[in-house]
View 1 (cartoon, protein in one colour):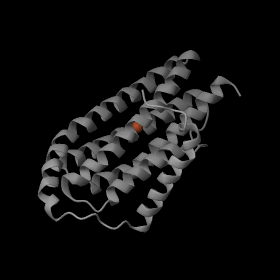
View 2 (cartoon, rainbow, N blue to C red; view 1 turned 30 degrees about the vertical axis):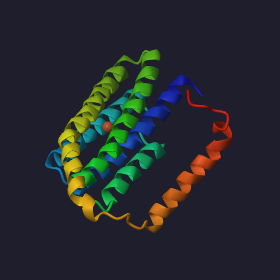
View 3 (cartoon, helix red, strand yellow; view 1 turned 120 degrees about the vertical axis):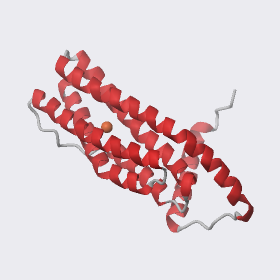
View 4 (cartoon, rainbow, N blue to C red; view 1 turned 60 degrees about the vertical axis):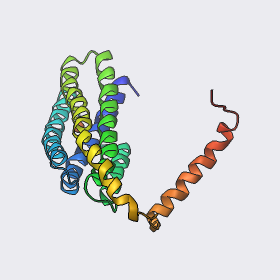
Length: 201
Ligand SMILES: [Fe+2]
């Protein structure tokens, strides 16, 4: 395998990630309650479509087809967004839950483009570097915008919690949540042999 092939793998992964997002973003816009957040998802959908086209341009430069690899990392990130959207929460509290998942998506993309860009630079692929830099900057701005739009949401969610607190009881977990809890306990258990010798400083 050559470094050029590593770059193609990274780019195909990104191409799949962006296409998955084109499908997921309308659902995120529909499922969130806050008007600013809805708009943010809609704007980022348009931007993401542009990023898909930009990646096609990159593949034209390389003389390769853009498909060939499914991005399971983005599949996982989108699953977290879906879980946040399906939560039995309302108003700002629901949007606050979507925040972490949306930020994970953006930072996952930032990581992917940063890696692809570093490889393209070391291969001296100037035109590809220019195209990838444009997208990377858009992703960084998108992450900042998500965080900025979250500020009023978090404030509203905090007071919503105060209002709801009086009649709050721990709700029973459904089958999916129970499975998630079981798996998280398993994660902790499997890390235990490595963790056993570690002390907090
Ligand atoms: Fe993107």
